[in-house]
Length: 222
Image (tube, rainbow, N blue to C red; front, top):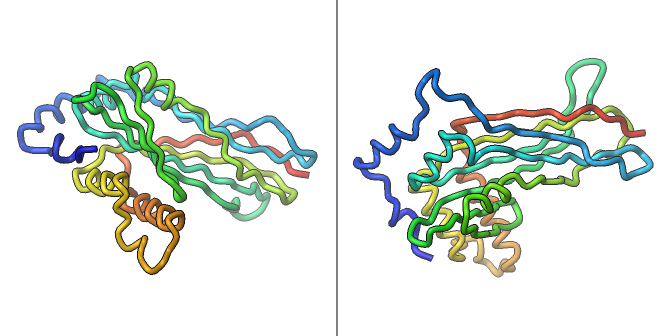
């Protein structure tokens, strides 16, 4: 696959696209929402898994304009398990995070969605905007339910940002199988992929242009 950065390198002449895509103060409101729900109680102890879902990314004019103009969008998801304590502060038990990179391929007239976790990277392509919308509103059930007795809740975070040319080059190298030093020293291919994915997550990490937070209901583990 040809490097996206070479096809869509940002030059000075793209500045008008950025100005058109940027929301005007007072004329645009965020339509994107983040939901954190609880899965049905399926254990005798009452432990529950979180279900995380983002809605209306494509319907939001600010982000859909950026996508149509050729700017890839990074969606950084994070879900945290918190123990509710009566005294002092609530305690963070554990967390899971992953990234989704969405980009439009104008030469192919389709959308590419890369899902990046600390263990792997997956890629899917969608021919229509409707298919892309359904894919981005997928409900993720994360298996991090607590086992110890206590009161708990989940906190979800969604960060949205556009990627730079350097970020795209790093992503393209990884997707082409260029694992760099991760595959040296007799390391297995699976370990190299996992290490490379973790490195890529760190590379893409940054301050999001938009940050959404949501919290689930509290539940009790007996």
